[in-house]
Every structure is written in structure tokens, then in C-alpha cells.
Image (cartoon, rainbow, N blue to C red; front, side, top):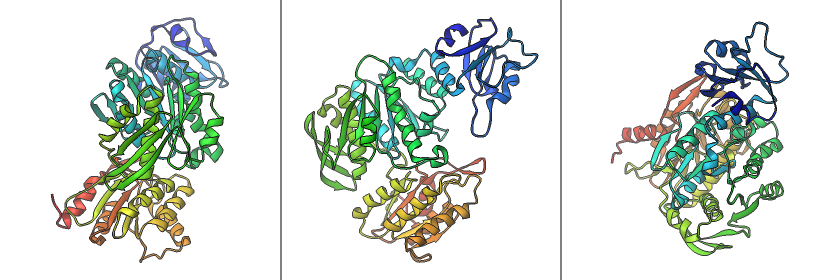
Length: 504
């Protein structure tokens, strides 16, 4: 693709250099530059790409894209060899150029974006399953990627990858002949323009509470970042239906409804909605319910427990209905849903107590998880959890208070301390539990080593208890400093059970 054609995706650029070279790639990493690449200088959290312009040029970049206002080409820059391009925002430019070099693959797929504070991963997996009757589905998610019948792990631990990676994955789905792509959309990814050119047809919301204030600073900014998914769906201008799927039971419903011109499909349990569920039977194996509303009435099985998973399923169902499916169409694959690794995942080695692994790592999600487990438990809930370092204090407070309200015994441990002292993070959670009236040594203990904490919880458990390991879920590492130390929650749980003599 010639540079001039690529730049047609950017409406407001200043170009220094008359060459129109053939472009081979678009990248934001100067180390990935090879002959013919366009290097986009993005300012990150710790590194500024503008510091690597010479490195990109030496590696053979055909052009560099810089943020306007930083001055023109430096003295000695040969714009006949490496074109100098200035853009209003290099993050916006990266998204546009990444999509253009791949031929805007989202335009050739049915694309649903799923966002919310909690439930994105489970809802995305459910949606990929529910939409399968419309053709083979793909998914880009926190835990893994889906290409038809094939699954691959997401090694990055990022819910939303950089725009270059998102567009490359969408192009791969298009090349594989998939019909639909489901994308988890984080508030970071939306705010940083990583999904600007994904070509959304449906904007699906689970819930919006308060999170990531370390990045967004205010709850208002966080909500605005989430609402960008609506604007991106409105702007996609693709043929066929484009709509929003909103949770009528959530506090964000009125805000989001007022923020969009899209047609809205509402879902809920407590509030009147276009698709509403009445729960008939709730067990540890799942929930039977009756769906009714605009599309008629249908019995449905949600094969994972918890009312919040019924809401996740309703979001998937409503999206399928928006794409023209019937209630019978969507409920059949939903009943066969196999679950998500690290989400309400059971570890069963014939021990007399239940062990559950879950990714819940916010106070809101943790509180919901414990509320689901309580009526399914004849004994105590023993919770093993921590909180990530370099995150907002509110998250630690929320986790501690949720455990104080919902767990019989809590084992406070390490999650991802990053550059913080793990003991200080644990201390913040302990302080929250003390403020909630819980007694250390009786209702909670501190065990900083996560493997040891899991072993202590297992050794303490009695028949009828539930041991819930929260916060890590599917993740395959614990981040200490800048290092990702290998970790597997399921393996740690099984090892602890083996030491107690339990085997299958």
C-alpha cells in the first residue's frame, strides 16, 4: 500500500517529504521497524515513542508519525528518505493507520463490543457461543482469543490490545472466513483509541460501577470512557442493524440511554425490560429461568450459577436478538455453554469441600461472587484474595469490605504487587476489614505467599465449606516489580489438595 493511500485514513496531517513509498507495516514499537514500515510515536505511561524516531529511521522506516506541536523535523532529518508526518493525536493516528494497512477488516465482519466494570469476559464467551448459529465466531478477550473452533491464550494480560494487534487479529478472522467478532472493550482501550476503527455493530454493556480511578481520575471520566463504545458504534456507518444492549437493572442505564442515538435493547431481572428473566430454580450447576419480553417467551438454562451470570446471559441473548435471531435460536447454544477458565471454575479432587477459582478482583465483583456462593454453602466461605499494587486504594477497601460481609474466614495474600510492598497492600485490606468490625486471627489472617495462603485455606476447610480463590482466575503470572513470575491458580490449588491426600 502506498503511503498516500494509507494517509487517506487520516484527515488532518502535515506531511514533510514528497516521497510516496510502499508501506509494509504500521508499528508503535521502534524495535519492530523494518524497511518500509511506518513508525507512530505514541506517548505511553513510562516510555515516549518520540525518543525513538532516529532508531526507527535507522531501521528503515519509510515514514514516522509524530504529535503536532513538538516542532518539525530535527536538523539533519532527510525527509526524502523518511517522510515526516505530524498528526493531532498519534494515538488516534495509530488506530486509523493500523486499520487501513489491514484493509479495515471490521467492515467485513459482524462486530460486537462488550464493556462494563464486571462480567465482560463471561459475557463475551457467552455471546460468542450464542451467535454461533449465524456463522463461525471469533473473540478477542482478556483470557484468550477464539478463531472459529480454535482457542489461543492471550499472553498479554490486557483486555484490549494495542490497535495494531486488534486489527491484525480482526484481519486473521476475516481471512479465516469467520462471520462475527466479539471484542472485550476495556475503559483504558476505549479512552486510548485502541478500538476506534473496529467497526462495531453492537455496543453491549454489563454494568458500570467505579473502577480504574488511578487512570481515569474521576468516576465521571471513567463512565465517559465506557460510553465511547456507543459513539464508536454510531460512527461505524456499516450496513445492517447497529444497536446498544443495556442493563436496565444497573445504575448506568439512564446515563447510557441518554448518551446514544442508537436503538436500545434493554435486559434485566428486577426492572421491566425488552428481555427479562424470571428465575425459576438456582443451583450450583446453574440457573433455570423464563425469558419474556418483546420477542415472546422462552424457557432458558444458564449453565453457570449466580444471578449476575443470568444478567450476563441476558446481555448475550439480547445481542443475538438484535442481530435477528429468535429466542429459541439463542437459548439452545446458551444451554450448551461450557463456561470460562478462571470464572466460577471448580477444582474437584474428591475433597469433602468445594474449591472455586474466580477472577473477581473488584469489590463489586467479589461481593456478587460471595453472595452467589452463600446459599450454595452449608458451611463457611473461606476466601483467599489480595489486591493489585499500583491500583486505587478504593479497590483494596472494596475487596476488604466485601470479604468482611460475605466470608467466614479470609486469608489475605498477594495478587500482583508490582512495585509496591506486598505486605503494605495486604495491610490496607486488613485495615478495611478491621474498620468493618472483623477480628484478625479469628475472621481473617495474613499469609503473603499465595501458594502458602491457598494451602492454609485448604487445610482449614471442613466438609461443607467453600474455599474461593479470587483475583487471579485464568492469569498465568504474578507481577512483582517488572517481572512476571509464573503462576497457575488451578495448579496451586491441586497441589495443596494433593498434599492433603486428595486425588482423583
